[in-house]
Length: 406
Image 1 (cartoon, helix red, strand yellow):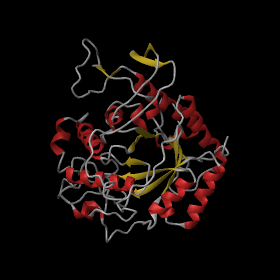
Image 2 (cartoon, rainbow, N blue to C red):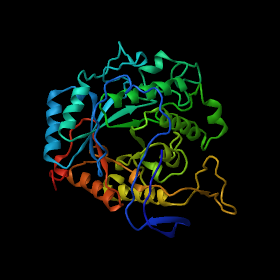
Image 3 (cartoon, rainbow, N blue to C red):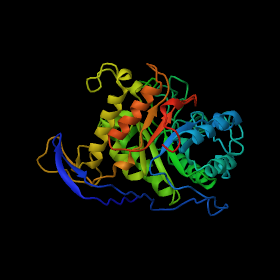
Image 4 (cartoon, helix red, strand yellow):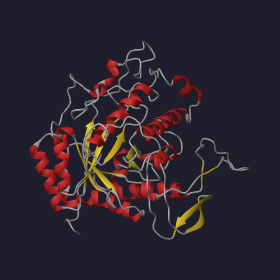
């Protein structure tokens, strides 16, 4: 992946770290280095839309995408409001692949999740309306694949059976390379049927379950050897493999926990912002105020200060991208001498890579037009211009959005 930054810079110190601030706009380009498993060469090429300068997106589940009434509702939203992008599940929490795949490894005769029989035609309909389309791929959470390949699944330490979280969902060990190929192939096929971008979610180790009885059959030794960054290093290997394996022209984005912008450890799930940035065109921190703990930056109830939670989180992200050093250990980089904690030199990165999720669902509080718009305004006030709305029920707050053309 390559980044082109055309700007004049000024250096300032923020929090003891030298930060480079741009005095004019950035330009950005991303592309992968290696092309493998290209399905586009085997199928008729379909047209793709360029990434909008400012992505304004809504999530659409596979179940909603298979419903004509939901399709009509979404098309009305795009016609009436500022929205210009749709994110559709092609593999959700169930592990079900939502369209008819060509590769034998992706065929699921016994999957029980929602299926969109005319996905290619649906994408063409969105394209005709000028809507940019993103395929959402849930990665390591996969209760379809895990029972079929228990040797690659996260297991219970006690009896080596397949581990499940509190919702009964199972995960694949982050280091399972056979599964990496499965994800790469799914990504390439998703692009080949017309999706303009691939969005990867659940790119992490599990967290919500009995963590005292858990075993990683592939990466256990690495995780135990480095309790601070062991998981992150293993996950970074997957990022690099994915980057190299996807077709060259594919635009990618990665969903990350919201607190990756303020934490420099891996949150015990393997996610470190600096390790994801080189391998994706965009990162999408899930900065949902309801998911932040009481006391976050002195905020007793994050649900009551949604603007501040979003603004603080993104200001920290921007600062880290513009910094020329980091406390996160970087592979092959020697720490700056006589610094404590150790600082590692890094390149300035384009803040346009940050494209956060916005909470448009009630959890811990009521999220109406005021709360949704406040989060969007915080994004703009942080110097960013793109965002994605998340509501698992697909019922979005239209009143929070500007009218089309405004």
